[in-house]
Length: 215
Figure 1 (cartoon, rainbow, N blue to C red):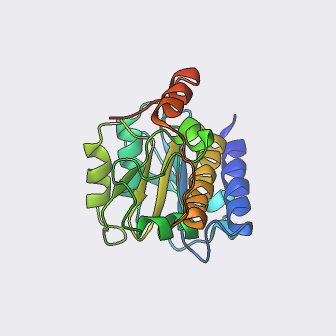
Figure 2 (cartoon, rainbow, N blue to C red):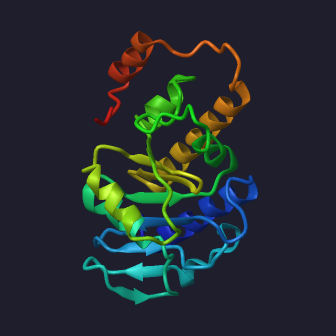
């Protein structure tokens, strides 16, 4: 894929997320790794629904901004995933409603944020780490991701939103959508005697689909 095609794809998928209500206003940010090791990043204060491919922040492989508008203030989050996960080709951060709501629930497990309701979140995300609340833009968020040493492809920022890394922009977007839908199911089923997947069933999914089940 050429850089022009990557720019177009990033903006197209971001707009799709926005139009379906998975993030709103000027919330959320998205990035992708270029063939030369640099990054394309959504600029600060921009809406997913109106990203301009030509104005994306462009970083070179040394982390220097070389063109485009100033980047999102959440660059520490993105940089931490790229630094610790060699296979990461894209990172997406949303302020999606149900995942944020589930992060406020007392039963949300900090080590395994999503309850085992369906196999698909397990297949696409592995275990999701629930991180504590940080002020938006706080570099400590990136430090918290780095402390996971690349063992998780997804984290949930409490009272804020999910962040997911994937091999491609498309796979990262698909995974973060699965995270939001799983959190929506959790909220819908909260307080009911729902039948969760058993530990044996979870292990079977992990083994069958070679899931990276981070420590």
